[in-house]
Length: 141
Length: 141
DNA sequence: CCGGATCCGTTTCGATACTG
DNA sequence: CAGTATCGAAACGGATCCGG
Image (cartoon, rainbow over all chains, first blue to last red):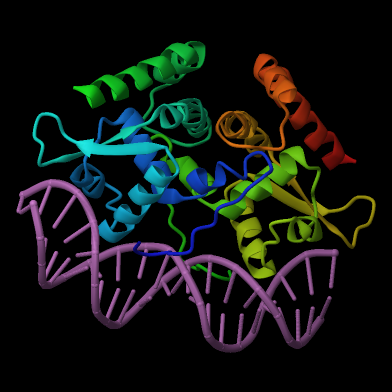
């Protein structure tokens, strides 16, 4: 296991558990990419604008898999490639991410238009379901 | 400015903005303490079970203040003491934190009882308002 | 090529001791 | 009580190498 070999396995109080996912910059970006950006491969993540280093990426993917948030499997279309997908547990992070987006949209200049934000707020549940579905279907095909 | 003198000031895409708050373990804990645990002083935060180091605490408080999430002011009751409180922008983080709690409760053993979780889910808005109000009133007294 | 692993110089973190 | 100063340990990022 590269980088940060010490694994902290414990937790009790609410939120503390989510801390390993949300307390980390890169893990958060990976989940966002999976949920909203249709990125699913190592290269997709590494090539993102924030450009994470490959060793760090490997580390985070390993941890997210260990924590049951994502799952890796060979791409059905091209067995040489590896696909990362969210598990159900990972898909359920969507509401948290959506609230983050809404908060950001409210207080900072973001890419989301006011109309999009209004739509997202009004139909939060539908938006979440859509993101999850698209992440899921693109994963299983 | 202690520790991490480089300030990254930019961002465009949704979520990226929230990354400085949520991408960091300690900032998240501080916001949680302010919102749900009635902690408001330097010593409160430093004494929490996770026990953040004082220099790190100083750093995060500085950044949270810089980002307009919290505000520092002398305690009205004892002017020698410093109180930290959430700004409106900070209070608006409550929905995100609540979703985190719910997710954690769903997938990990947490301190929240099933009944509390059900209550929190059903009356999300009320719960958020309550947390914000308690944080606010205890702040202004 | 893709998905990593490994090495390495630099930055940041964080535990502890200390100070106004 | 609310922070600084110090300093070793970790994490980071960049480059490069490697197996399939």
